[in-house]
Length: 91
Image (cartoon, rainbow, N blue to C red; front, side):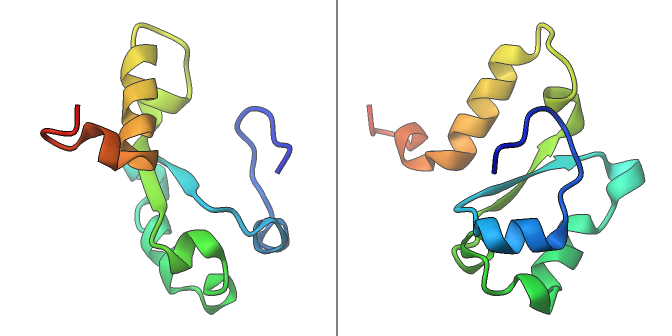
């Protein structure tokens, strides 16, 4: 989608981009229920990420800063995008 950093994206832009995966920042206090509302929104039902059930919430602390959490961030996103690599006995 050509987005750098953390930005709000319009509904239209998401629909046109039709992403395979959507990663949402999970900041429970401010965005409680956002993922569920997105999944129920009729406007997004044609988006591939929703059809394939690949809309994930990632803890905000892992997305908003570069810190000692960076390794956990990479592993968290890798597990969401490629769970088969992390299955028991797949190594």
